[in-house]
Image 1 (cartoon, rainbow, N blue to C red):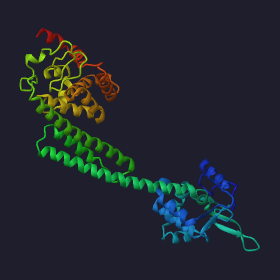
Image 2 (image 1 turned 45 degrees about the vertical axis):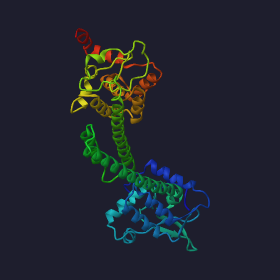
Image 3 (image 1 turned 135 degrees about the horizontal axis):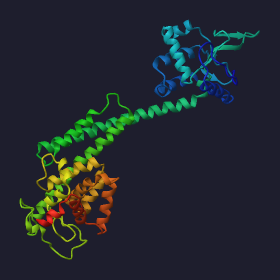
Image 4 (image 1 turned 180 degrees about the vertical axis):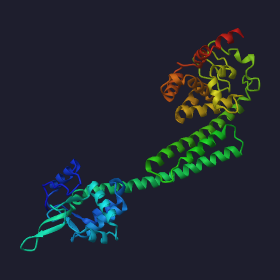
Length: 404
C-alpha cells in the first residue's frame, strides 16, 4: 500500500490541514491489519448521521468498494481504485454527474476516502513489466481500513441510542397515559383543586413532543412528564391526608375548623411553654407560642401567592393547592416539598412556600432554602412566626395589625 506521503488535490480544489492530517494518519496503519470491506461499509451506513453523510454518499461509497476486487482491505495491498466518472455513476444507480461529484466531496470531507490525483487529474494505474500495478491515481480506500474500529464503535453507539430512544418513548407513552387518566379521574370525581391548571400544563407538555423525536429531546420531555405525574399524585395524597386530618380532628373539642377560622379565639395561646414544640395537627398552623396563624394574616404577609390561585384562597385547602403550583414554578422538587409537609405539617409547608415566594428575588435556590428550613424545624430551631412578621413589616402591615 502506498502510504507515508501527502498528495495535494488537482485543479481548484483546495488543500486543508485536515486533509494533511488524514493522509498522514494512513502511514500509522498497523502492519498486517485487515478488515472486511462490507462489514466496514455496514458500520459506516449505521453511523451515517454521526459521520455527516447521506444515503447517496453511501451509494457512491458502495460503488467505489465494488471496484476493489477483494473482500478484505489489507494494509499491504493496493487500496486505490480508479474508475471513471461514467463507470462510477453507472454502479451508483445511474447517479447524475453533478450529484456524483458532490457526494464524492462529502466522502472526502467525512474522512472515509482520500483523493490521490495524478498530474493531469486523470484516474489510472501504471503497471510494471509483470503486469502488477506499480502506482495508481484515483480514490484511496485506506481511511476505511484505518478507521475500521472507530466506525464499528460508532455503529454500536447508534444501535444503543436507538434502543435507548425506543425505551424512552415507551416510558413516555406510559407516563403520558398515567397523567392523562389521573387528571381525568380527579376532574370527573370532583376532587378539590385547580385541576384545569394541571390540565393546561399537561396539554402544553404534550404539544412539545417532537414529530421526529431525538433521544435528548424525548428524555427531557419524559423527565418533565414524570415530574408532572409525581405532582398529580402528590396533590391527591395531600388532599387525602388533609381529609383524614379533618376527619380525626372532628372528634377533638380543641380543633377549630369552620367558616369562622379567623375568629378571635384562634389568636389566644394554648400554652406559654410551647416554644420549639412541633406543630399541631390542626388545620390551623401554629406559631412558636402555640398561637394559630390566621389565614388572613398569612395572606397579608404573602399576598403574591394569590396570583397562583385563580379561584381565590378562601380556606387552607386553597392555600395548599396554590402552594403546590408555586412549588413547581420555583423549581422545588416534589420530594423536598413532601419532606417539608412531613416535618412542618401540610398547612405550615404551604405557608413556608408562600413566604419563600414572597422573597424569591433574594433566594438563590428555593428548593435548598426549603430543605434548610425543614432540617432546622426538625431540630426545633425554626418557627414561622418571625418569618411572617418580617414579611408583614416589609409589606407595611405590621403597624396596621397593631393599630387594629
